[in-house]
Length: 408
Image (cartoon, rainbow, N blue to C red; front, side, top):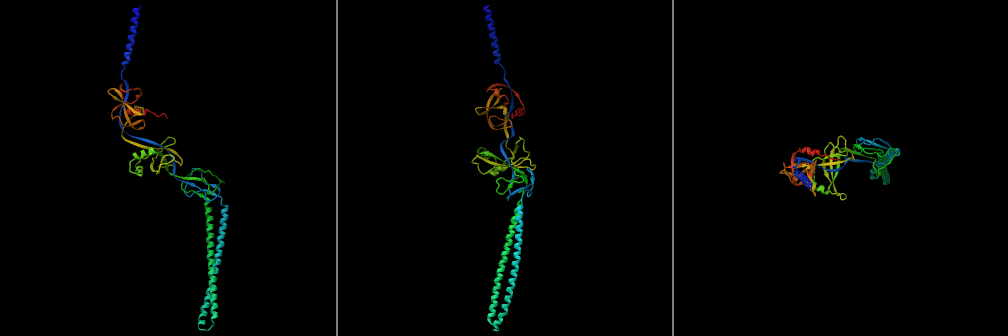
């Protein structure tokens, strides 16, 4: 019986040993592989942006008064010079009537002064005739010199009166000019009581209504008018990004680099892409000391008026890689901050360190480490170890890339 037990135990151990041998002799792991490819790839760098109309004018009252009419509505398109508000003008009209009456009185004074000048001139002429008549008689001793001196005195008195009359006329003319100026000033204020659009564009918010008292010293404007036929999107780069831009952009100067920049895209707040592309036109000349950023301005056409003053979005600046080495994102893995792929060498997976230039749409743009046409493991790299025997299964490069979908 003991011998039978020993034999059974040895048989069981033999079976277990055979199973272990079978586990050890498993075949190579089957893995999908793709070849390293060369492609033209376009990546994007994104920056939050604030959108403003090309021109944004505040509308303010030039005189103080109560709003009697609001002639437009928020969001309405208005043309330059179009009336927007009317202010009360009762007092101004009274002042205009008084100024008009002042002009009439001043003009009457001018007429009277002209009449006085004419009378004084006539007196001077008569006195001069008398002097001219007496002078030869005195020279011939026909009459005494006393009569001539009396005539000369009358002439001098008449000339003085003429001078006074002319001075009075000038003063009357000045009175007419002053009255006219007063009237024009009042009339200008009456004209200012109709507040007009300074430019053609779209109206903003109308915070004040009929009955509100407004004036030139108000802190807040009555409204704004924005010319949005073209809009500007403003975005900022930090110092590192700005220096990277200077190094990567073509050109010797900043204006030249801006001219050589490709057209950029605008992603709207709902995630859609604005149909028109924009051009980076300008960059501020210095770093903002408070934020440590430098601001760029992008111009977008807006003929359809899809964009409004105050919109937000995201500027996407393209980065173009021509004839770049690429592999699927799923073929890479990281260890201690370094990026690797598994390259298939003699039916085994060997980890290879690669240099990464960029990551674009589930593709990794490679600087070095692998060459075009070399076979790499496309998926499941987390289950491999260096030297793992593998059985290759060709996979479609684009299917591998497109299989990765964003979670959000």
